[in-house]
Length: 288
Picture 1 (tube, rainbow, N blue to C red):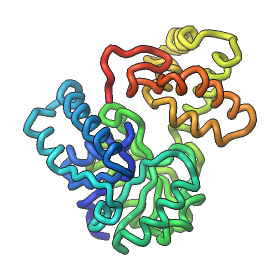
Picture 2 (cartoon, helix red, strand yellow):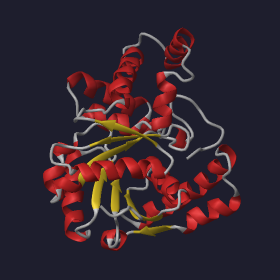
Picture 3 (spheres, rainbow, N blue to C red):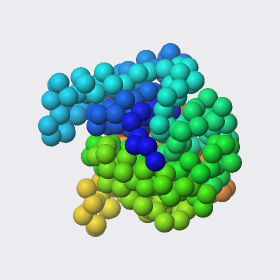
Picture 4 (tube, rainbow, N blue to C red):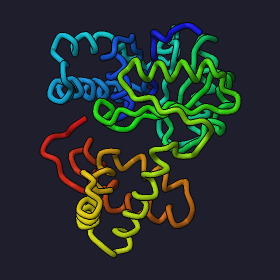
Protein backbone atom coordinates (compact mmCIF):
# COMPACT_ATOMS: atom_id res chain seq x y z
CA UNK A 1 0.00 0.00 0.00
CA UNK A 2 1.25 3.50 -0.88
CA UNK A 3 2.38 5.76 1.95
CA UNK A 4 -0.11 8.36 3.11
CA UNK A 5 1.00 11.85 2.05
CA UNK A 6 -2.09 14.02 1.53
CA UNK A 7 -4.71 14.20 4.25
CA UNK A 8 -8.16 15.79 4.33
CA UNK A 9 -9.92 16.62 7.59
CA UNK A 10 -13.71 17.00 7.54
CA UNK A 11 -15.01 19.28 10.26
CA UNK A 12 -13.20 22.24 11.80
CA UNK A 13 -14.50 22.10 15.34
CA UNK A 14 -12.15 21.95 18.30
CA UNK A 15 -10.78 18.47 17.59
CA UNK A 16 -10.95 18.65 13.80
CA UNK A 17 -8.79 21.78 13.86
CA UNK A 18 -6.34 20.08 16.20
CA UNK A 19 -6.07 17.02 13.96
CA UNK A 20 -5.44 19.24 10.93
CA UNK A 21 -2.81 21.34 12.67
CA UNK A 22 -0.95 18.38 14.21
CA UNK A 23 -0.92 16.59 10.86
CA UNK A 24 0.42 19.65 9.05
CA UNK A 25 2.93 20.29 11.85
CA UNK A 26 4.20 16.74 11.25
CA UNK A 27 4.94 17.54 7.60
CA UNK A 28 1.80 16.39 5.74
CA UNK A 29 -0.17 18.38 3.19
CA UNK A 30 -3.62 18.95 4.69
CA UNK A 31 -6.94 20.01 3.19
CA UNK A 32 -9.66 21.05 5.58
CA UNK A 33 -13.38 21.10 4.76
CA UNK A 34 -16.36 22.71 6.44
CA UNK A 35 -19.84 23.62 5.31
CA UNK A 36 -19.60 27.40 4.80
CA UNK A 37 -17.37 30.48 5.00
CA UNK A 38 -18.50 31.27 8.54
CA UNK A 39 -17.23 27.86 9.71
CA UNK A 40 -14.00 28.36 7.77
CA UNK A 41 -13.48 31.76 9.40
CA UNK A 42 -13.78 30.12 12.82
CA UNK A 43 -11.35 27.43 11.66
CA UNK A 44 -8.77 30.08 10.79
CA UNK A 45 -9.12 31.52 14.28
CA UNK A 46 -8.67 28.09 15.85
CA UNK A 47 -5.60 27.34 13.72
CA UNK A 48 -4.05 30.70 14.61
CA UNK A 49 -4.77 29.95 18.25
CA UNK A 50 -3.11 26.55 17.93
CA UNK A 51 -0.04 28.29 16.51
CA UNK A 52 0.19 30.20 19.81
CA UNK A 53 -0.58 27.13 21.93
CA UNK A 54 2.12 25.04 20.26
CA UNK A 55 4.60 27.89 20.61
CA UNK A 56 3.91 27.98 24.35
CA UNK A 57 3.47 24.27 25.13
CA UNK A 58 5.26 22.10 22.55
CA UNK A 59 9.00 21.65 22.86
CA UNK A 60 10.86 22.69 19.71
CA UNK A 61 7.85 24.40 18.13
CA UNK A 62 9.54 27.55 16.86
CA UNK A 63 7.99 30.18 14.63
CA UNK A 64 9.45 28.86 11.39
CA UNK A 65 8.13 25.36 11.95
CA UNK A 66 4.70 26.65 12.96
CA UNK A 67 4.44 29.01 9.98
CA UNK A 68 5.35 26.08 7.73
CA UNK A 69 2.56 24.04 9.32
CA UNK A 70 -0.02 26.72 8.61
CA UNK A 71 1.24 27.00 5.04
CA UNK A 72 0.54 23.29 4.50
CA UNK A 73 -3.17 23.71 5.36
CA UNK A 74 -5.72 24.59 2.66
CA UNK A 75 -9.28 25.40 3.71
CA UNK A 76 -12.29 24.53 1.54
CA UNK A 77 -16.07 24.85 1.44
CA UNK A 78 -16.14 22.62 -1.69
CA UNK A 79 -16.02 18.98 -0.57
CA UNK A 80 -14.95 17.71 -4.00
CA UNK A 81 -11.98 20.09 -4.08
CA UNK A 82 -11.02 19.17 -0.53
CA UNK A 83 -10.79 15.43 -1.24
CA UNK A 84 -9.68 15.52 -4.88
CA UNK A 85 -6.24 14.02 -4.24
CA UNK A 86 -6.55 12.73 -0.69
CA UNK A 87 -4.79 9.58 0.43
CA UNK A 88 -6.68 9.71 3.73
CA UNK A 89 -9.84 11.49 4.85
CA UNK A 90 -10.32 11.92 8.60
CA UNK A 91 -13.92 12.73 9.49
CA UNK A 92 -14.50 14.78 12.66
CA UNK A 93 -18.10 15.95 12.24
CA UNK A 94 -20.85 15.85 14.92
CA UNK A 95 -21.63 12.54 16.61
CA UNK A 96 -24.87 11.95 14.71
CA UNK A 97 -25.09 8.61 12.88
CA UNK A 98 -27.29 9.66 9.97
CA UNK A 99 -25.21 12.79 9.34
CA UNK A 100 -22.08 10.67 9.16
CA UNK A 101 -23.69 8.15 6.82
CA UNK A 102 -24.88 10.91 4.49
CA UNK A 103 -21.43 12.49 4.52
CA UNK A 104 -19.70 9.23 3.61
CA UNK A 105 -22.12 8.58 0.77
CA UNK A 106 -21.10 11.97 -0.69
CA UNK A 107 -17.44 11.25 -0.04
CA UNK A 108 -17.59 7.96 -1.91
CA UNK A 109 -18.82 9.78 -5.02
CA UNK A 110 -16.16 12.50 -4.79
CA UNK A 111 -12.98 10.94 -3.43
CA UNK A 112 -10.49 8.91 -5.50
CA UNK A 113 -10.71 5.14 -5.32
CA UNK A 114 -7.39 5.03 -3.46
CA UNK A 115 -8.63 7.17 -0.56
CA UNK A 116 -8.91 5.66 2.90
CA UNK A 117 -11.79 6.93 5.05
CA UNK A 118 -11.31 7.21 8.81
CA UNK A 119 -13.89 8.28 11.36
CA UNK A 120 -12.95 10.02 14.60
CA UNK A 121 -16.32 9.04 16.10
CA UNK A 122 -16.16 8.85 19.88
CA UNK A 123 -18.81 6.20 20.43
CA UNK A 124 -20.28 4.97 17.13
CA UNK A 125 -19.04 1.65 15.77
CA UNK A 126 -17.51 1.83 12.27
CA UNK A 127 -19.66 -1.16 11.27
CA UNK A 128 -22.73 1.08 11.72
CA UNK A 129 -21.35 3.40 9.03
CA UNK A 130 -19.31 1.20 6.70
CA UNK A 131 -21.98 0.31 4.14
CA UNK A 132 -22.53 4.03 3.46
CA UNK A 133 -18.86 4.48 2.54
CA UNK A 134 -18.93 2.33 -0.61
CA UNK A 135 -15.48 1.02 0.37
CA UNK A 136 -15.75 -1.01 3.60
CA UNK A 137 -12.29 -2.51 3.06
CA UNK A 138 -10.80 1.02 3.19
CA UNK A 139 -12.85 2.31 6.12
CA UNK A 140 -11.60 2.45 9.69
CA UNK A 141 -11.89 4.34 12.97
CA UNK A 142 -9.06 6.63 14.09
CA UNK A 143 -9.90 8.17 17.44
CA UNK A 144 -7.99 11.07 18.98
CA UNK A 145 -8.24 12.63 22.44
CA UNK A 146 -8.76 16.36 22.83
CA UNK A 147 -5.59 18.49 23.14
CA UNK A 148 -3.78 15.98 20.97
CA UNK A 149 -0.40 17.70 21.25
CA UNK A 150 -0.52 16.74 24.95
CA UNK A 151 -2.82 13.69 25.21
CA UNK A 152 -1.44 11.97 22.16
CA UNK A 153 -3.11 8.60 21.86
CA UNK A 154 -4.61 7.51 18.55
CA UNK A 155 -6.91 4.49 18.79
CA UNK A 156 -7.16 2.48 15.57
CA UNK A 157 -10.17 0.18 15.16
CA UNK A 158 -11.36 -1.59 12.04
CA UNK A 159 -14.29 -3.82 11.20
CA UNK A 160 -14.28 -7.40 9.98
CA UNK A 161 -14.14 -5.98 6.45
CA UNK A 162 -11.21 -3.59 6.95
CA UNK A 163 -8.18 -4.59 4.89
CA UNK A 164 -5.32 -5.49 7.30
CA UNK A 165 -3.00 -3.37 5.15
CA UNK A 166 -5.24 -0.36 5.79
CA UNK A 167 -5.15 -1.10 9.51
CA UNK A 168 -1.35 -1.22 9.48
CA UNK A 169 -1.15 1.94 7.36
CA UNK A 170 -3.22 3.84 9.94
CA UNK A 171 -1.04 2.62 12.81
CA UNK A 172 2.00 3.90 10.90
CA UNK A 173 0.32 7.20 10.05
CA UNK A 174 -0.62 7.78 13.69
CA UNK A 175 3.02 7.33 14.70
CA UNK A 176 4.14 9.63 11.86
CA UNK A 177 2.07 12.50 13.26
CA UNK A 178 3.44 12.11 16.78
CA UNK A 179 0.69 9.96 18.28
CA UNK A 180 1.00 6.78 20.32
CA UNK A 181 -0.93 4.21 18.21
CA UNK A 182 -3.31 1.97 20.15
CA UNK A 183 -4.56 -1.05 18.19
CA UNK A 184 -8.01 -2.40 19.01
CA UNK A 185 -8.27 -5.99 17.86
CA UNK A 186 -12.05 -5.96 17.47
CA UNK A 187 -14.86 -3.41 17.58
CA UNK A 188 -15.74 -1.89 20.93
CA UNK A 189 -18.12 1.04 21.34
CA UNK A 190 -16.14 3.76 23.08
CA UNK A 191 -12.76 2.23 22.18
CA UNK A 192 -10.43 2.03 25.18
CA UNK A 193 -10.51 5.67 26.28
CA UNK A 194 -14.25 6.31 26.24
CA UNK A 195 -15.09 2.85 27.58
CA UNK A 196 -13.33 4.06 30.71
CA UNK A 197 -14.17 7.77 30.54
CA UNK A 198 -17.88 7.92 29.59
CA UNK A 199 -19.13 5.98 32.65
CA UNK A 200 -17.12 8.34 34.87
CA UNK A 201 -18.55 11.45 33.20
CA UNK A 202 -22.09 10.09 33.30
CA UNK A 203 -21.77 9.26 36.99
CA UNK A 204 -20.51 12.78 37.69
CA UNK A 205 -23.37 14.35 35.72
CA UNK A 206 -25.87 12.20 37.64
CA UNK A 207 -24.48 13.45 40.96
CA UNK A 208 -24.74 17.10 39.92
CA UNK A 209 -28.01 16.91 37.97
CA UNK A 210 -29.63 15.00 40.83
CA UNK A 211 -28.65 17.70 43.30
CA UNK A 212 -26.37 15.40 45.30
CA UNK A 213 -23.22 17.51 45.02
CA UNK A 214 -21.88 20.61 43.30
CA UNK A 215 -19.75 19.92 40.19
CA UNK A 216 -16.70 21.55 41.77
CA UNK A 217 -17.03 19.35 44.86
CA UNK A 218 -17.40 16.25 42.71
CA UNK A 219 -14.12 17.21 41.06
CA UNK A 220 -12.43 17.80 44.42
CA UNK A 221 -13.38 14.33 45.65
CA UNK A 222 -12.09 12.69 42.47
CA UNK A 223 -8.79 14.60 42.47
CA UNK A 224 -8.05 14.17 46.18
CA UNK A 225 -9.14 10.55 46.51
CA UNK A 226 -7.51 9.24 43.33
CA UNK A 227 -4.60 11.61 42.76
CA UNK A 228 -5.95 12.39 39.28
CA UNK A 229 -4.89 15.79 37.92
CA UNK A 230 -8.41 16.63 36.67
CA UNK A 231 -11.94 16.00 37.89
CA UNK A 232 -14.72 14.78 35.60
CA UNK A 233 -16.26 18.24 35.12
CA UNK A 234 -12.88 19.69 34.21
CA UNK A 235 -12.66 16.91 31.62
CA UNK A 236 -16.15 17.83 30.38
CA UNK A 237 -14.89 21.37 29.79
CA UNK A 238 -11.84 20.18 27.86
CA UNK A 239 -13.93 17.90 25.65
CA UNK A 240 -16.57 20.58 25.18
CA UNK A 241 -20.15 20.01 26.31
CA UNK A 242 -21.64 19.60 22.84
CA UNK A 243 -20.17 16.15 22.17
CA UNK A 244 -21.28 14.66 25.51
CA UNK A 245 -24.71 16.23 24.97
CA UNK A 246 -25.05 14.56 21.56
CA UNK A 247 -23.99 11.20 22.99
CA UNK A 248 -26.35 11.43 25.97
CA UNK A 249 -29.25 12.57 23.75
CA UNK A 250 -29.09 9.35 21.74
CA UNK A 251 -29.06 7.07 24.77
CA UNK A 252 -31.80 5.78 27.05
CA UNK A 253 -34.36 7.81 29.00
CA UNK A 254 -31.95 8.36 31.89
CA UNK A 255 -29.09 9.66 29.74
CA UNK A 256 -31.54 11.87 27.82
CA UNK A 257 -32.47 13.47 31.15
CA UNK A 258 -28.79 14.17 31.79
CA UNK A 259 -28.55 15.68 28.30
CA UNK A 260 -31.50 17.95 29.06
CA UNK A 261 -29.80 19.09 32.27
CA UNK A 262 -26.59 19.93 30.39
CA UNK A 263 -28.55 21.86 27.80
CA UNK A 264 -30.75 23.81 30.19
CA UNK A 265 -28.08 24.82 32.68
CA UNK A 266 -24.99 25.18 30.49
CA UNK A 267 -25.29 24.85 26.71
CA UNK A 268 -28.28 27.19 26.38
CA UNK A 269 -26.26 29.83 28.25
CA UNK A 270 -23.28 29.55 25.92
CA UNK A 271 -21.27 27.61 28.51
CA UNK A 272 -19.71 25.07 26.17
CA UNK A 273 -16.44 24.45 27.97
CA UNK A 274 -12.87 25.64 27.53
CA UNK A 275 -13.36 26.60 23.88
CA UNK A 276 -16.09 29.15 24.74
CA UNK A 277 -14.31 30.50 27.82
CA UNK A 278 -16.79 29.01 30.28
CA UNK A 279 -18.38 25.67 31.06
CA UNK A 280 -18.43 24.27 34.57
CA UNK A 281 -15.49 26.63 35.17
CA UNK A 282 -14.48 30.03 33.82
CA UNK A 283 -11.30 30.54 31.82
CA UNK A 284 -9.37 33.82 31.54
CA UNK A 285 -8.16 32.94 28.04
CA UNK A 286 -10.23 31.15 25.41
CA UNK A 287 -7.96 28.20 24.51
CA UNK A 288 -8.26 26.14 21.35
